[in-house]
Image (tube, rainbow, N blue to C red; front, side, top):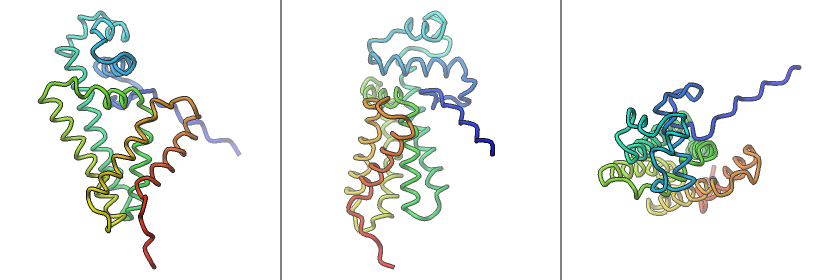
Length: 212
């Protein structure tokens, strides 16, 4: 029996591409900037650095973005929108069982974190570099994404209060989003399994089995 073809690997940090195989120039700039920002910090990277990473001059960046800060703002807004939309779709596709919804949400976040380590790093570290208006918009989106998790954990453990469910959700994010610090220590599939098991256990900690 012929073996299944291996899945095409996902290009790192391509979550912001509408078509990962054929990113637009704007998307190439966002990806290159994410990787540079993650490596050096957004304040240590100039438009010339971003241009060199995508094979254009620094000033050519201004055809797509008004400034380097605009690159960072769009990056973080797109990440937040992508996570919120993906989280909602994931819960909807998982059916009515809260345990299945939680497992699907964890798998979604684990895949995102493992496939987009630079974006995760920038999201965690550089939010404070945004202007007030952009930062407020990102935080609103992030809160809405957290509340998707809080609702699922609350359905899984109705006896837990909202604050407890929110604390569990943040603990899970801290666990999963630490992957940029441990990348490469295990093969991806093994790391995904490890993170998934630990994250589900953390989110459902203290949940009592329902009696039949």
